[in-house]
Image 1 (tube, rainbow, N blue to C red):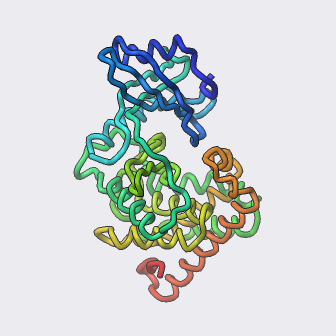
Image 2 (image 1 turned 135 degrees about the vertical axis):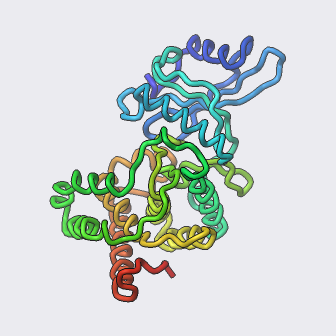
Image 3 (image 1 turned 180 degrees about the vertical axis):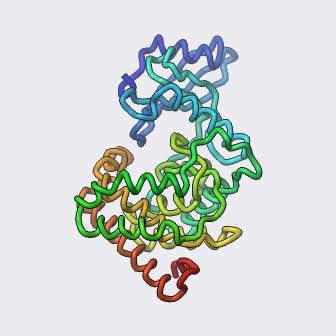
Length: 330
């Protein structure tokens, strides 16, 4: 089972594929993640030197654990390596689970850990923003992204239709946000599509000595709108820290971007609505990462505040710049 320890014999076969003649010295659980178990493996090679790799074993009951999805994630990791994005490099793919009984990917190990509540929010947010901009610099004009899934305006329209009844039953704020999203989808500006991580938040970054050294967990990466990543990370920062941290990150992204992204409030509403309808499912990952202060009541309060801030920004933009788009957060 992916949630428990792998059998020693199975790990020995995996190690032999990675480093013929080598043996496993130690396996250590890495915390965080919902769809896969992560372990750090220390391997002694045949010549006596040691190396460390990350073992990613997918949960059988997770929608991303199907062989085709795992194989796709491996190809995404190859794209990430080619693009020079700081991230683990792919080393071995077992999409059918022949070695350990579940679909598995082995990656290079990035020493360090996520940073959730930094001493200096400004410099931390700057690092988060710069790493995200490197991801968004991967565009169809520079790389072959034809193998990626696509989630743009048509996909968002479909998502809103699928969430309609749930939103209507989920309270006045959910109903208002859903109505605004439906009304505004053809009014906002749509920039060029880029490579997006689609789950970009501090828990999917690795830090060492105060520097961001890599981005992990590329399961949901696709061709999409860069504002989805900006809004998702902003939402997580609002939940983990506060709205000021979310604004600091947004401002850092906009300040370092080649061109200001318009109408980010729309994607704040989109991601915030997703969270409002399903935040209970996020809490297991938060708590596994040690973020136990994010309780159900805390999460709901912060999500509602995030949504109200986005609605206020939308209203302000419509009053001050009708037909042009959202003004930047100050």
